[in-house]
Amino acid sequence: MHTRRSSRPLRTLGAALTAAALLSSGCSADASAPRAASLSKKAVPAALKPYYEQTLSWRPCGGADFECATLKAPLDYARPGTGRDLGLAVSRKKATGTGRRLGSLLVNPGGPGGSAVGYLQSFAAIGYPARVRARYDMVAMDPRGVAESEPVTCLSDKQMDTFTQTDQTPDGRGETDRLVAAYKKFAHGCATRSGRILGHVSTVEAARDMDVLRAALGDRKLNYVGASYGTFLGATYADLYPHRVGRLVLDGALDPALSSRRINRDQTAGFETAFTAFAKDCVRRTGCPLGTGSVSAARDRLGAFFARLDSHPARTGESRALGEPLATIGVISAMYDETAWSQLRTALRSAMGGHGGGLLNLADLYYERDTDGSYANLMYANPAVNCLDLPPAFRTPAEVRKSIPDFQKASPVFGKALAWAALNCAYWPVRPTGAAHALHARGAAPIVVVGTTRDPATPYPWARALATQLSSATLLTYDGDGHTAYGRGSSCIDSAINTYLLTGRPPAPHTRCH
Image (cartoon, rainbow, N blue to C red; front, side, top):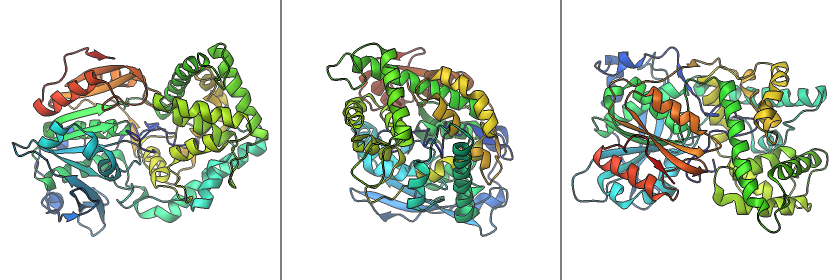
């Protein structure tokens, strides 16, 4: 999302909150796809050989010694070679060292919907430690339906502005009908504008594309660092191709065994945990916009502020006003990284005084809305993947209403809005192809799963669960706040992961970093 370090799984209060994994995130596999045992050791089927044996044509791009190419992949793996192919955007920066290379290191920042190519060119190629970049070619591929790889699109930018301002906490029949109509219009727009690819953006298909890329790069094994939703993508690859796993780091992990409803509920609790940490820090500071009393009082004050915006939006200095939906997303946006807390305090103070521009900027960051009013494709790719990977969390408004007390128990601040956000896949024009199930990757080389104890978007129990499911995984724990851990300031985490990437030696079991 606004990919700071990694893209977030929970994308929008309206367009994407079906997990990641989630939330966000898509935590399932394509039911029609071959399972791991049928793919890992068998020879490549004859119909797929042209894809596996293709030669990538590299060209300069992006400056700073980057190269780009286009990978050809079948639109439908069940019907390869029919002429219905996809062109997937790939970028790399070759290893900087003169010694022995370790191959390619594929990176994915999450989403689903985050541009891996953009992430590589803006951060990963310089943000990764020099000793890692010296040994690996840094590589990224935008997954199918994302950014430069046959992007899904659904609405015009003006329509997207309207969508993001739709009331996400309906109080009666009329507001509920308007929210449902917004979801239906969004889904219809996706079907109209992206019909060719909409049924073929599942995580399993993206993982199969990764294996085609591995072969085209000339690598015997896949080395990979995935964050957030990227952990589900990487774990899916490992489950499909366990004997082709090289060194895999899964940071900010998703639990693929959870239903969409459970994922959304867990994330709701995760954002409440993050807000509690923010509020504890805020009330100790002079001038905290939520007061200087208890966390409970701060929570009540924020709730009252949201309620006021529901009927009296704040001005922002532009045509869009700051209503409750955008204010809620603005606060959620700052929960991903504690370094944004200062910005949130300032934005809340200003908005409570009637000037909502700061919170609007945070919401735009989350939605990847540019200053010219255009939206990145993430807002469309995210629900496209999520709604294909898992059955919907809710199928009717009545189901949402019944679950609101449970969501509000998980988060008095965000519960109602996030419950209604989980309704979006109910109206999706393509039936889901996946179902939640554990991933095991039996026979894979050692894998490192990283979990942050107060991660709002991918709660820590998910990392524990994934590390337990994967037969060769080691759990590396960061005791801290924010979403994901690698490259965010913990020398303990960074050292453990760098050592693993360079030597293949995972951290000791039960390693805990601060």
